[in-house]
Amino acid sequence: MAGEASAEAARKSSQEAAGTTEEPQFPVHGDDQAAAFFDLDNTVMQGAALFHFGRGLYKRKFFETRELARFAWQQAWFRLAGVEDPEHMQEARDSALSIVKGHRVAELQSIGEEIYDEYMAERIWPGTRALAQAHLDAGQRVWLVTAAPVEIAQVIARRLGLTGALGTVAESVDGVYTGKLVGEPLHGPAKAEAVRALAAAEGLDLNRCAAYSDSHNDIPMLSLVGHPYAINPDSKLRKHARELDWRLRDYRTGRKAAKVGIPAAAGVGAVAGGTAAAIALHRRRR
Image (cartoon, rainbow, N blue to C red; front, side, top):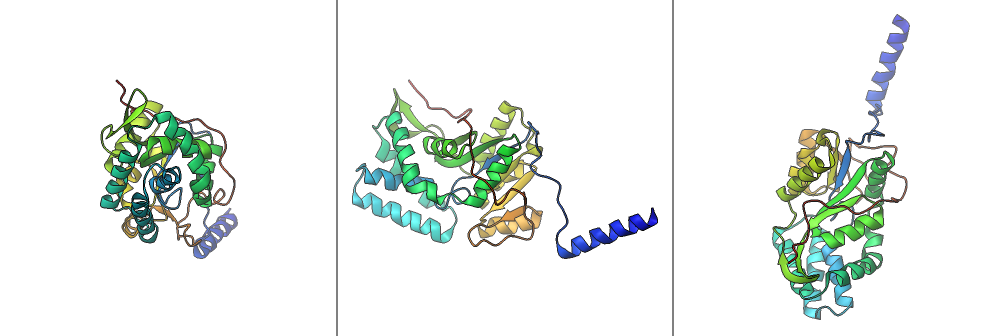
């Protein structure tokens, strides 16, 4: 007994020294009270979905070259900075609302499918997609939670095989966009409230759930769950994550942070199967 105990202690000590100590299996298979919540822009997809959507609308002559130049500048800034600037994001939302005003919801949903293939599919981070797949393989539900329009978010979620999406809701009357929002954009603390509401409706235990984001704006959402992950983090989130010993992953350079998560699933698979779902956030119709 003494010899076996000594050998086990030596094995663990050598693993710790080499940084190879095994972590408990995560996600936990068969845990139907656990789920995963993924931010979209620069977490699941390189760049901002709204900007890519704008490119697709320009191609279809929804607006003039002047507006395209503004979209291009905003996207270039976002990609270089890797963080969300509230002023840029608000300007992009205002531009998008004015562009879609008067168009039918069904028309934009159909176009969104085409734009996903044209501009978004190739910008999905394979590593983040594999993390989502790990949750799906474990029998858990996976949602996108994003400030992007809910129609865009639902297209992306469906094409990636996720459970559904929560996003910003544009007002429509009789199936036609009015150019206004229903409530506020789903950003920052609003994301946390949406996740809390969804968890309550779905019977989830947030302590057993995971959340993934690149932005310090999503610290409220990340702080809600028992398993927060910083993905491609901005400097403020990286600092916060290290202080709280959250797991980090950075797919922009291929480097792994010292504390990684889901080691067995990180390099495998495409996501398959699933249906769109959104609660509490729905279009206001008259």
